[in-house]
Every structure is written in structure tokens, then in C-alpha cells.
Length: 293
Image (cartoon, rainbow, N blue to C red; front, side):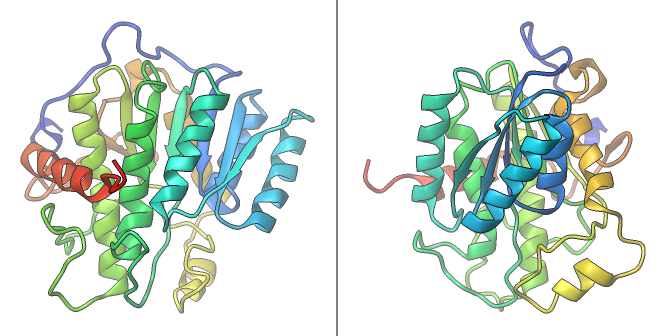
């Protein structure tokens, strides 16, 4: 494991030893799929769940479902579109002004775009929504998360991942939607690795949710794959993996690691190594710098 993820990190004293009910847990991408299922499961444990979603109608419906799962306890919620970094900053401001403690940040929002488009912030949309937005949100909430944990929904990296930590927009290359998605999810894994090194008082993890029946590709031809392909698992089953990483004792988990349903997954050290993790962090910091400051 150490050869793939670099040094093994453990929480400093004061880190979360185990997560019982009544924790404050922020879940992005919570209006459907894995995020909504996890929110329902956590609300049923009496946790204070905060739902973040892009679509107002879908988010309102999700709030109703989570309220029911929590036996009438009102979940928090905030509408934000991660294709706008201004929305990420507004979300962070809301969370910091509303919740004196945040125990878990589940960076679960994700998307795949089959054609290239550039956000208002000047980045390719998939890398911004799937990596740069959660990277920025985590940094803005860093102090509030001290002693807690970050869980990034990623995927098991395939052998064809070619992420360049110094060129997140993959400039000069022909755009391929699936490759862009895979690169963004590889960035999630590297982010957790480097966060574990820089922030040892926060447990930082990545999640491989499995092949899940979701609507992540609802605006693309991939919607048929994510809805009807054989061997897909339900969002509820996959959400149990997220809930486990959000609630298990820190002693059971390795800081910076990628998890599926069981033990840590060791990705290819050719890409997933401490040097690339540090390079990605530097590039990401530059990418999300607020031009107004």
C-alpha cells in the first residue's frame, strides 16, 4: 500500500475515533443517486445532514425524502452549481456561517460531458465540477473540518488514465468525454493523498462506489449505460460504502487511501505517487485562485 500511496498517514490526537449519530455531514451531489441514498441512511442515524444540489426542484424533493428518513428532522440544504466557482464560495460562506462544526464533507457531486465546454471560470467543465470545485470547497472549509474527515467519490482508476497534474484542462489534446471523466476522478484520488499529507488532523479518503445505476450521464448518450447496463448495483448499496467511510472508526481506515467495499485499493504508482499528488495540488491552487483577491 505504501508504494502506491506514498507514506501511510495516521490521524493526530484529537482526530475522529469513531462517528456516532448527530454529526454534521455535508453531501454534495445529494439530490439523486449515491448522494441522496447516503443522505437518507445518515439521517436515519440521527446525523445532521446538509444537502447540496444544482437543480432546485430535485433538491427540494431530496430534502423531503431525507426529512422522512430522519423522522421529521429538517436537513440543511443549499443550491449550488459547481460549474461556477462563485457558487462554491457562496456555499462555503453559508456553511461557515451556519454550522459551528462540520464533521464530514462528502465531495460526491459529479458529471460527465461528452463534448467540450468551458466554464465561466475558464476551465473544462468536467475537471472543474469533479475536482476543482471540491478541492476549493475543502480548502475553504479546512479549519472547520479539523478533527473530521473528507470523503471524495471517485472511481477505481483504469490502466488508461493519462492525467497530467500540470495541465488539468488537457490543452492541445482532442477532447474525449470518458477520458476527461476518468482524469477528473484520478484527480480526486491524488487530492486525498496530498490532503492526508498536508492536513494530518483531517481524515481524507477516496471512494470507489462500484458500477452504480445512477443518472450521472442523464444529459448524454451514456445515460443508457448508467441506467441499464448489466451488473450495476443500486445507489442504496453503493451509498453504504460512502456511509462506512463517513462513520467508521479512524483506526479502521488509512488516511489518504482509496476504498471500495473492503480493504484499500492500491492504484498504479506510475501516476498515483506523492510527487504527482503535490504537483496536482499546486496546479489546482492556481486554478481556483479568486481573481477578485
